Every structure is written in structure tokens, then in C-alpha cells.
Image (cartoon, rainbow, N blue to C red; front, side, top):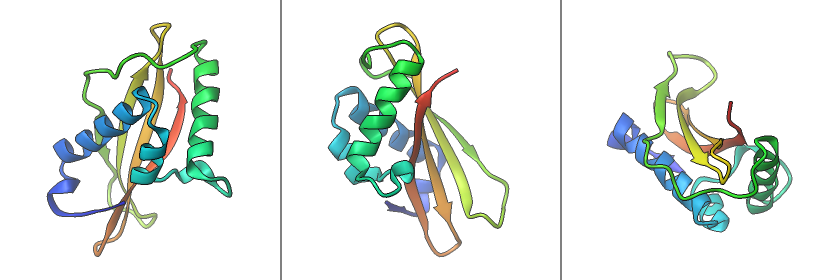
Length: 126
């Protein structure tokens, strides 16, 4: 999704991360995929790819399902200016039924003219 202006501020990016976590926690994978896309979908549709990676992530942390959304705000970090187009990273933790978490990462990429926010990865949290 394209974002600009005050949407690039830390509070706004954290709110996008919270939104993504809420979609996951409520099982609304279709809305998550429609809103943010999925960078690791490759040639698969985004919904199926997210479901695949979520299932794999739950297995990797020994969990069966996601618990209600965490109230902690996602962490936002900004990249130093670079040639790759990476601007910011949003990291949130989706709690699981066994007290562990799944890591949810969104990235902001682009150039001076436009920036895009995408769900980058879902993986087992450390």
C-alpha cells in the first residue's frame, strides 16, 4: 500500500503494525493480505502464502494458535539512507497459546517520490 506524509512517522507506522497484528489475531488473513500484500508470496496468492508461513511459524514455536492481540506497540526502526530503497521496519509480536510469539515484520520501501508499506515476513520469534 502506498503511504506518505505523516504516515511515515513512528506512531503511524506502529499503528499499521498493530492493525496487521489484529488481522492475524482475529484470523482475518484475507483483509491482512488485501491491505498490506505479502512480500514472500512469490507466485502464490498472498492469503495462501500468509497461511502457510503462519502455520510454519506456529509449529516452529511449538504453538497451535494465536492468542488475543498483544497490547504492546510494535517496534519501528528507520534505515540509514541507502540505495536499496529500504526506509523503515515495523516489528510486532503476535502472542501464541503457549506464551511464545510469532514475529510479524512490515517494511516501508521506496524513493523520495513514493513509499510503500508491505507485510514482509511472518516467522517464529526468538
